[in-house]
Length: 154
Image (cartoon, rainbow, N blue to C red; front, side, top):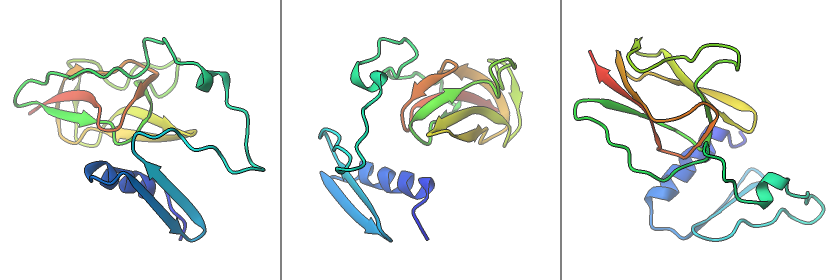
């Protein structure tokens, strides 16, 4: 059984919580190497591709990830990004946002989508309540464990 995206995300979460500087895994012909603080390693010879222009220059886009502490009122539950990716507040560009501040949500209701490598993951409300705050913009790059929403429970 090959590694799934969810498996890799779990492995990265475990590594992030540990003191390891480097981890190398070989699972069924797939090699995964994770290093802290190092530069990204190039693709093996024969499969190298030219990086896209976006990868070559740092972004000054205001929608890129911001390293800021988010204040959440006591008693509010936070919804955090389970992965790094692009978060979308709308199911499609021409549609309304899933939720707005003040929206009433039921447990399991969609809050946003996170896209990673053309795969979309629906982020659902973990509890029923009212959206107290939205800490993201549409089409914003989000980091793992970044606070996306605050929900005031019923």
